[in-house]
Amino acid sequence: MSTVGFTEKLLSADNVSLSFGGVKAITDISFDIMKGEVRAIIGPNGAGKTSMLNVINGFYHPQEGVITFRGKTRRRMKPYQAAASGIARTFQNVALFKGMSTLDNIMSGRSLKMHRGFIWQVLHIGPARNEEIRHRRRVEEIIDFLEIAHIRKQPVGKLPYGLQKRVELGRAMAMEPELLLLDEPMAGMNLEEKEDMSRFIIDLNTEFGTTIALIEHDMGVVMDLADRVVVLDYGKKIADGTPDAIQSSQEVIDAYLGVAH
Image (tube, rainbow, N blue to C red; front, top):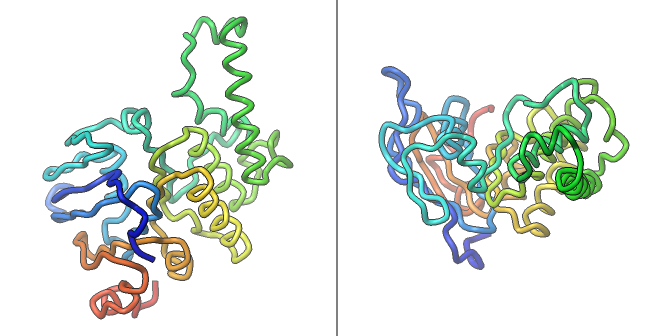
């Protein structure tokens, strides 16, 4: 795959460096994400992949470098500001409200899109009620898309791990992001669950036009899903290109593909 067909740059990271005390997590990393593509970020454990996502959506603030998203350059951004601007995120470890139902967890992803004030929401009348009906209709569409209608009323804490990951994807989808960051969406899944998740990611990209950046260790998944791949090692970028080019890079083979991971 290549960048043919992708003509608009959605996000760029320029010379980003991040340190914690004296430990360098990211060193002078630059790469871009084109609107409409699936962009994979790979590398060994400790390579700086999650730190890079945390910089993109405002959890971390880099000491050097900038992030430009939809033409707006910034050095510092709060996570809620990133979410409001169109960036959604899932995590390595499932971060759901375990006592709430699947429906309510996904509904929580609509909070930034609810415009009626707190009093209207408490009273649950008039415009607030109509607004909730519209948002709930959208959530039901997401539930159908992810094929989880059978667990819509179940507390997510009682669901199998693979279904919890699907619910978390649904909550991120409910934000209707322009850029969706997926941190190891296949982690801990069996083959069937990985195939299902891969299908949802492909459909989300092709049918909804969502741009996706994902961290993933399963190289079969990466090669099947990604349009381009950036490779990190010890906090530095060592390669950037198409899946075929990455697979044939000797530096990548030596640093990552040639070892157990």
